[in-house]
Image (spheres, rainbow, N blue to C red):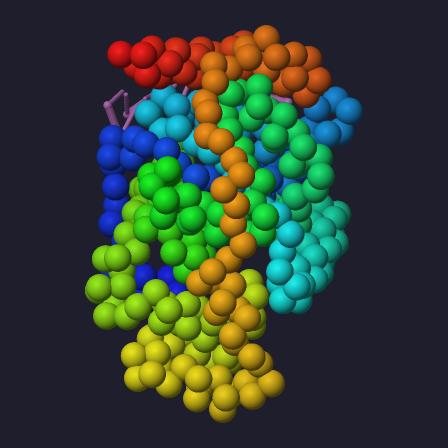
Length: 333
DNA sequence: CCTACGGA
DNA sequence: TCCGTAGGG
């Protein structure tokens, strides 16, 4: 869920300093890995790969971002998606099609020597596969970072953990965790604070959205926020054509959600989607434990099998190790 | 995305 | 110390 709801959330976000972010972060793993795979590429769109042709972009991203988090007093837990609900299938199919088209367009752009277009299409063709997931989990294990298998949507599980107070905030670029009820969402949690946008490099700051403030500000309940999401469209339903954030806000404030759906999409029953956001499948079956990284294990994996520079890997790990050790000591005192 | 490095 | 750029695997 993207642009449409962003409009009405624009005034509900605050930029936040890294110093105010120490705590435990539930990272939307799918979202982070996808970002790494789309963006960490050469100018012609080729992702980073080892000599055997295995993609390594996500491993690079995970290693360095994790090192940065720990260095800044943030302990991450990565939350992986489980089985999607059946009403997500249409979105999944559509995305697969978009990626396949982008893959073709990437090849075409390469043939025509248009590198900017090649990079753009390559980004859009990025896809998470079993290697992405398995190698990321292996790296996290070696780094001593916990990860959780959500029964369904990772963002729902993350929201649940923040609600329970075990986690300080959810980290994602998507807004879904707010609909799932996460009390706090942090976006743009990147170190460089820079991002390429339409060819330009712009500065982005970490941004915090507090659910209760958002609801106060807009004068709505979480149920109504979910209704807004459904009206503008989510991963689980297409939304009503022509209804953006502002209109949706007006509709739910007037209590006209049901009638708007009945009028514009009579064949669509919003109840399962609403129920899914308000009471999603989550699990208590996990433990949060951060361990000292297995330095030699990480070097064996990344340098031995994925051709990372050992010097770079050890340098990143030295930052992690120090912090992890300090945390262990802190726990004792 | 990230690090590293050189110049202002 | 900040910024732009090259390169990572």
